[in-house]
Each structure stands twice: as structure tokens, then as C-alpha cells.
Image (cartoon, rainbow, N blue to C red; front, side):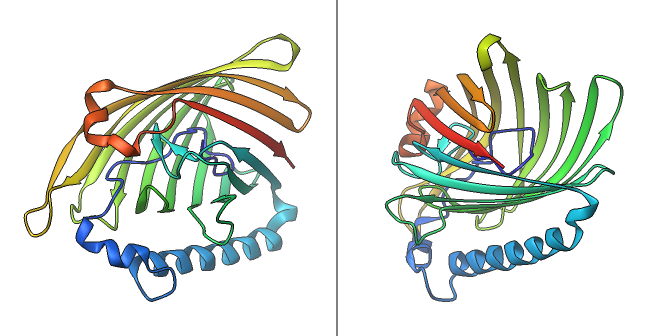
Length: 272
């Protein structure tokens, strides 16, 4: 799964996964001043600026990172990349006052020179009681793989200890022709077991818009789809191995088609 270095909701935005087909030449150009190229450059600038900010204020907060090798990059049940090994790295900076900044990027091992997913996140967390916390945040996603989109997602999340997380968010896809906010909701559970093992699970619902037909008569099929996962984790020190089973409701698969992720996801992670 996509991890951006601290966001309690593990799944990421995937509604409106592809721009219209008539924009395909722009999506494929990796060098020119196309929307995809400019977004990639914007992400690189944001990454450098954020790293400088973190370096300048590291003493005032906590800096952490994660490096993961996974069988596929997945976001809310949909495939960001093809079903091929992918490497993802992320860094997070958290202050005692509750502010956090997270950065992450993902590549396919067979194409290490291409950034398939980039994430920048800013969030603020409040303690509500001994067991409950609340977090608000804004996340920017740059997807340049099987999912191709530039996405902004504001959201609010409620956390019960480290066991239960519920989130509501609105998804705005900048690269789409439909300028509207797509709602999404996620519920995730993490239950520790003995011997370093844990059970994890999650369900959610989000709105999608998939193009069909050909220009100039191209149309969108829109609707809500449901997704979920169940997984087993094993942790030892800074290392973690996770096996997840991913599902998308059958009624939506006919429209999402090749965007649906592989049913099994294996991930090896190292925290720093």
C-alpha cells in the first residue's frame, strides 16, 4: 500500500484514475512541459523544499523514515502500478505540538528512472482524550503509472489508540475535466497478536469516474465502489512483513477493469 510517512489512513485516493484519452500524448511525454512533466517537477521542488525545512527544524521535532519493497503499489483497492515489484521510500517529521510533514515516492524496480507515485502531506493532530485523537490534513498525490492523476485530498480522521481509525475526505483531481470534489470514507483496524504478529483490516467507499468511448464523443461512467483488505503482519524490531488480501466489489469491476489491483499484496518494510 502507499504509505506517506504517518497518515493514519493507509489507503490513498484513486477516484477518477485516468484523464481523458485525448490527452494521452501529454501523459506519455516524460520530458516536455506537459501536465505530467510539470507535476513531476513540482513534486521534486516540493520534496527538496520540504527536506530543507525538515533539516532546519529537525531538533524541534521527530524525524522518521520507511523503506518498502512491495509486489505492487496500490491505492484504495486500485493499482497505481502494474503487478510488478516496486520500491517506496518515505520520510516524516512530527513536532511536539502535533504538526507533521510527510513525503514519499514509489518506483517500479524495472523502471527506476521514473517516479510512479509521489505524495506530500501536511497534517495537524489533537489529543481528545486518553484514548482518542483527531487529525486533519491535506495531501497531494502525483500518480504517473497505471493511475495517472494529480490529486488534492483534504480530510479529517479519528483514531482510537493504535487500533481503530476512521476517516472522511474529499478528493479533487486536478488533471480531470470534472472539477468537483469526490467523497471517500475509510475504516481501518489493527489488532496486535502474540509473537510479533498482528491482524489488519480495512473497508472503504469512494467515488470514481472512468472514461469510455472515443473523442469527441467520450463520456464518463461515474459511481461509488467499495473496497477492502484483510492482512497478517509480522514485526521484529524495525522490520515488518505484511501479506494482504485485497477486494473490490464485483459490481464496479466491470467499469474499473485493468485498474483493479492484484488480489494479493506482499510487502517488506524497514523503519528508520
